Length: 301
Image 1 (cartoon, rainbow, N blue to C red):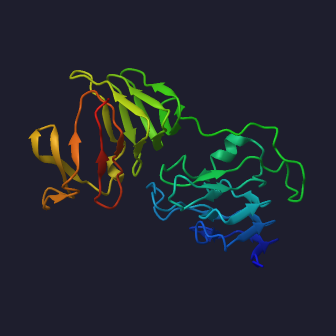
Image 2 (image 1 turned 135 degrees about the vertical axis):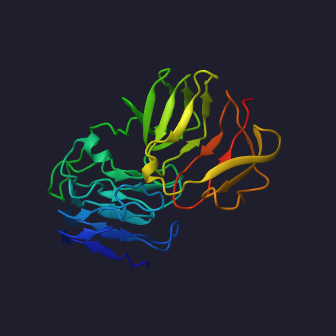
Image 3 (image 1 turned 60 degrees about the horizontal axis):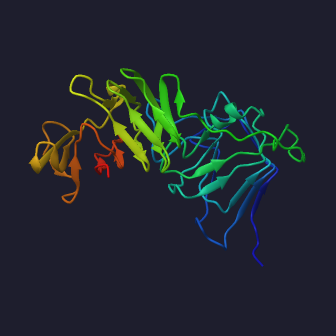
């Protein structure tokens, strides 16, 4: 019989660092399991090593859960505002769902809860963390849950801000400027239309994943512009060019960190078509410390 390790009935108060509890087993293993229950995590201060930069491979939260065979339930998670995130994941697998249900978050307001979770809604290549239903109050043994509430997720459009998962049609306002504060993930049934004159200003280290449809409707006079919002935090000042193609709009992608460096090839078999108006199947202009830029595009059928 499999013996299940348990971490239960502990109190984690007034800690600081990159996380308080990091839980991870071999993802997908049927022989491993860990229970993390009835613990109280309060007044902990967890911040990133570089608070001005958005991390892609690591998130800073009080509780980090990175495998689905870790059972996390009936814990008290209340560390705001000293910590931005209560729960995060490092698991880079979009197909995995991690359960963080039946927690007491210090509130039953789902809008406040989803803002404290770092997962697929922040970075498209991460697993998804499920929080619904939650505990209705701070008695961790209560049978009363918020199961009558409706689970929500961060809205894709929030005024002049965009980001998160898009599963419906969305069209930008012509000539408008939007700040991208989360990865944009256009799901298979999502359709994103960037109207003439639209500007998307990406916060550092954020990107765009397209599984559905994106149409950039720019013109010569009113182009669609995708750029970094604050270049003072861009530590990857990579220069990009296309070479050895049949035209200036097509060819092999090369990059170099600075004008004094040598051009390097990303992949000799990747061809980039820069279309004024087209369907982009996948494009990830992720600004981070590595000098890697991957793009894959296809023309509309």
